[in-house]
Amino acid sequence: MGKLEGKVAVITGAASGMGAATARLFVSEGARVLVTDMNETKGQEVAEELGPNGEFKKVDVSREEDVATAVDQVISNWGQLDVIFNNAGFGGARGPIESISEDDFDLTVDVLLKGVFFGMKHAAPVMKQQGSGSIISTASVAGLQAGESPHLYTATKAAVIHLTKSVALELGQQGIRVNAICPGVVATPLAHGPLDEERRQKFRDRFGRHQPIGRVGETDDIAQAALFLASDDSTFITGTAMVVDGGAYAGRPWHRQSELMTGQGPIKLYRPEGR
Ligand code: NAD
Image 1 (cartoon, rainbow, N blue to C red):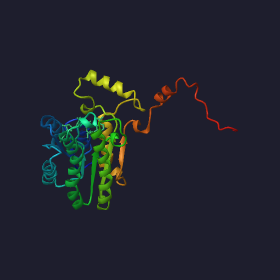
Image 2: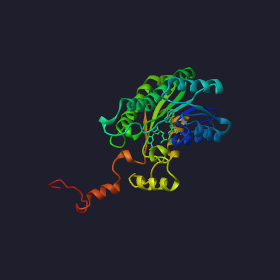
Image 3: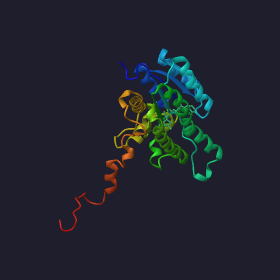
Image 4: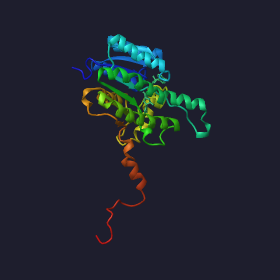
């Protein structure tokens, strides 16, 4: 029996990357999934691949009405909503602070923060009525540590983590768990752009070297974390920001520490005077 047997999920940004991988894994574990995305062609393809347990709906997460109708659709078609995975995203505004226009600020916040807020807002009443549910949102290690991503990406992902904690405190007693996932570098079009397989491999090689675990993340690494948070394996876990990053947020990889120490002679035990 699958870990999500009989459950119903909505996944945003499910036409590509982590969202698509999660949709595939959820269905293979017994769930019915509403694949949602702005990209209609790719979203339809993913839903068709899922067979009778997958459906597609075009949703722009920055539009409240789109998110609300996605929740309504699963309720009218499947009668319940057990999991919402607020995952849609893009890189957002880039560049020095003075170069960011108000329009680009608004778009970045609308997609990366408001989109998550709408998912939580519209899933909560349905889940409250059921007395159960799991709300999962994709944040990023960029939300924990500055310097890895553009300003507004970093700021909105930090906000997603805090919103997760705050809403978890509200909904915990009603059987609803609210968690975030903080991926590190994962090989998806968002991270490397639209590349052919050879250049994707080059991306993996280049960034993999800088990860403590020696490789970049793959979409299945994130899908497995989402499965854990969606399933009854994690019923005591709420309000967390689960880091899934090959150790990058823990600190500088060991080989880079050694490189920095080169020229300082062999590393010796530090002995306080007199010992
Ligand atoms: P991806 O580009 O493969 O997938 C993102 C999907 O979101 C796309 O299908 C896109 O069409 C969709 N989307 C974008 N804006 C949307 C909107 N307004 N409404 C609905 N759908 C929209 O990228 P991914 O890496 O799988 O990204 C998934 C999530 O992971 C994002 O929230 C991203 O910020 C986050 N993330 C990615 C990485 C990484 O290294 N790839 C690291 C940390 C966090």
